[in-house]
Length: 407
Image 1 (cartoon, rainbow, N blue to C red):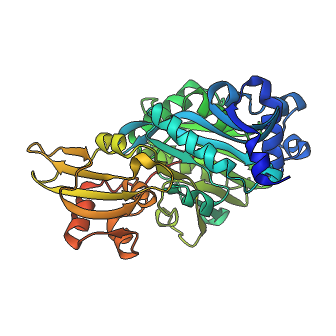
Image 2: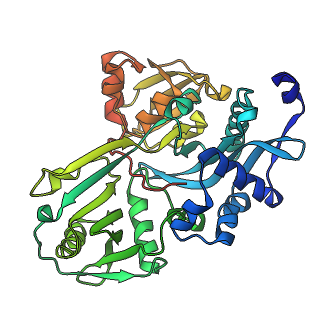
């Protein structure tokens, strides 16, 4: 039987709760996750079976079916993300998998096309995902927008104590102050996911129960920083550090350093986009960097109209000549002009202004400020006159994204 014959009998339809077992089976087959591996981090058999039920309950999940058999699938979480202070509706893509016997039939391409159309219809003008293959997703229009830096600090390199007026308290994982503190942080921090109940479920999903949350309270008992960590094999393992000010940073590191006699090293992940070493007195630590989250603008017109461009002189205009390999509605010209009040106005179909030739991947990473316009122009990912690149540098905020979540 030929692939075209098989393809003809397949149909796309939404997954419902009745498809939970098939959804889980395909995920675990594709990503080679066994019951033994899940049990080692504390999962019970019933929990393993129900692990992804929130996806089918709260997400938009599409699949190709061969009769009643699931062949390929994609899920989109309804999420929100901070983009330079503007809260955007975001489609979090996950659960992407196809059985090998259905490979090379274009099934995932069609599912992603449909998912993008659905995200656009729902007003989700940007999408994030954790890539299993960066080249694959780049071809579909996603691009790297954040890094994860992993660091190792020997016990002898831990920072010296800095006097602060507050103190650290260990709290339960579901403590109200912990969630409120992250909400305050994410409202201020570009790139941060706005965690609702579903996002918090995903935050903890693959962690052991021994994970500890410690909050720094300032002198007036206001929560201003936290560390999420695990003590294991003489190592202080940090999942996430968040702080609203430098006092909280010092308070958190005072607390970590207080474990000097209990651990040989501190290891952790840093999602700030800035190296940890410079903040330490002894900077000769080991740090590694790897790409983390990818994103793609789903609806360029909506995204640009909401984007918080910095002010520019009235009359300044930029003409984006955009290409997009998947979303035909983005394959267009977009003009951005600044009015008398210094506000940016986006017009679809207009060719007025200084031309910028750019693809959807580069536009996404540029507007997310993962890479600056001058750098993108230098490596020929962006084509524009030097004065236009200078204008882009002026109007696009420079803060790098913070994104520490996984789904």
